[in-house]
Image 1 (cartoon, rainbow, N blue to C red):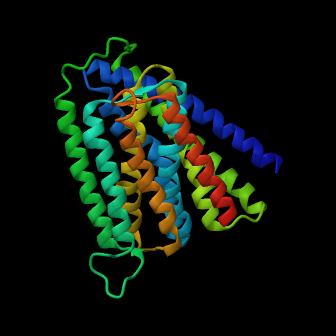
Image 2 (tube, rainbow, N blue to C red):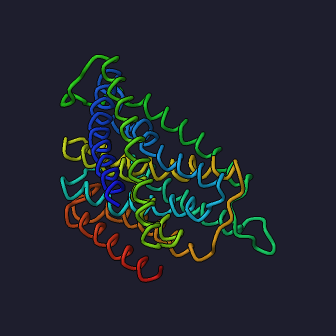
Image 3 (cartoon, one colour):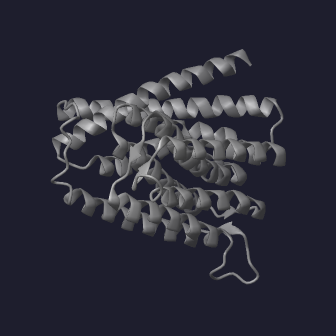
Length: 319
């Protein structure tokens, strides 16, 4: 048990430094090429911090641990929206661009709802067969392609972005920081997940609960550190872009690739957790119109964190 705890702490250290390097390198690249920070958060940071989910899901899919694979993504998206965005908002209020309010957040909500339809096979299965098939995976990957095209278009419209507050390094040094950050996040995420899963298994926790809590939180730690670091360093676009982008990547990329590799059976009782994913995204959208428009204040951030704690208690009771 002591070795497991030591590995867990080592994973946290790697995640901390990885998040710092990634935010710093990404911000510098954004300034050098005059690219909006939101685009960096929606792509490089989001993809890098979603790497642990992708690796865990591929391994879980090949091993037949489908509850861990699905619970990982569903739980991670809940953690991203409620815990991570809430924690970042508690550090500093997060101003959200108009485009994020009306485009990226609604798109994340749309793909969450779409996932619910695909998992429950509302479109083409009679009798209904609960699973995520290879054809579903292709649909998700096609939507990912469209999303990346949108982000590319967004980058072309970012010529007037003011990145004057960002410290700029050389391109090679910035890329080195990004690579070091991604390596630290991936290595730290895997280390935290593997040691946390070992600890949970030693305590006799069910596989579904592991996927929704230990694995989900473990693989979301990169997003947590990246978003918290971004909020602390006054870069709200990276903080919000990381969370929204990671949720989109988790569904379209992680589940898209996983289900393309092998069909993923879906236990229907996870619909409750999927509903939490949809509602959490919906309420973040609603929060954009309370108080100061297009801004997540500390009160709203506290509500998000509280909602996550209540949900976690529910999971422990449900087991």
